[in-house]
Image 1 (cartoon, helix red, strand yellow):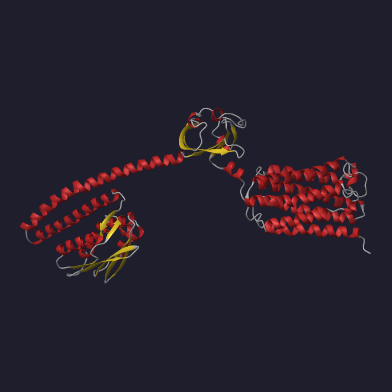
Image 2: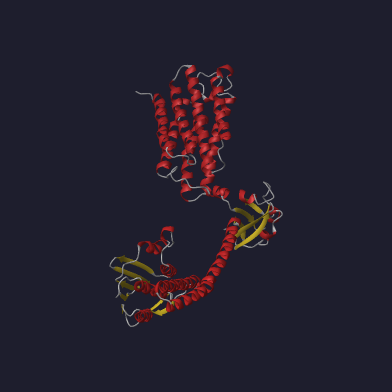
Length: 561
């Protein structure tokens, strides 16, 4: 018959292998909060359990002593790893190299004391089974065991506190991490202080339970995949200053950004807002006792003028109808204010430049061109030969420049206009334009296919866009008898105006104005008329499409109804 106690070392070895299976998966998750501590804890559990199992079956004192040192090492790695996991996951504080180095020095010192125990017997006494026979432990040995349990307990309490204050997936993850550590802690206490005979140790059950719970947290609770950021950590790292005050406007808590605005350092709890903000209390404290505040204030900090957005929110107490306090949030908008001021100055400069250019185009250039055109027309009438030809060219060029000046005026009016819709009769608008161009272009065929009435709530400036399109179709035609067909298609959700011509088509470089919305150095020949069309369409709810080729152009303007 097999002695059940002979199976205990095998149970320890098998139990110690389980945590190792989780280490490779944990290593693949980069620098996620809690990853390093989890790996250290898993390795510690494995070393602790397997070394204990081997020590149970060893008979040589030196062998048991060596394995016992690994038992202590594994136990401390498990406890310290659990603590590092809790600190990093809860965001209690940042793990600095100095802190981690100080923690690592403790197991190294304990290893030295354990291996040199035969020289002083302060750890495990004179027992033949060091570490395994905990009843024979000396005062230093008992202190090491108690401190290791205390470290694990502190880690578990940190995670319990986080689970209580957290919500959602973070609460479930924190609860899983508590469930991973507590079984091993409890069974270790029972193993050492309740069960007298070490051969009946139940430690493997705790390690196996912890391993399964960690696996559940990793694979079912997405631990290390989805690591929620703690609310406290968010507040601590946010750039906005956050201050919590009680019902009497005494500071209860604040983040580092708020302390940078204060004249105090650490002794801020319980002080009034006036004392907290020191030399600049008035702009902020003028809202004392108020909530629902959302405004801007200006203060001076270190001789620098700062603009802040102030928001004050009420904090309620579920046990009372009165406010428990207020949350004050201050956002530094100094840079935004400076950009706004620079933008306003730039806009003012551009407006001044626009007015100057418009005045020059409207008055000076237009008046001077009118004079030049008048003299050139007189010369063309009185002269002959090359002189008359050149004078006629001056007249034509002057007409083009005057037309450009007029279009510049149109652009100014388009930019300055209000974006307001009005009720227009699209059929009447197009009929008027078609009649006008029939009169000015007698050799052309201009037709209109539209319903008797087509009332729309749209931008009246669309008439200018139709005007320019008809003008381009007729003036840029290379034939003697151009044909332009205008049609209106009324539907339930939109009305489409189509303008077809049989001209040479619009150059691709000029259509780029409408497609890109800007003029590039390679496309500086784009017609100013297309710019006007672009701005009218862009500032209205309509859309435009060009289908052009060598056999003509179709322009479709879709107006929502």
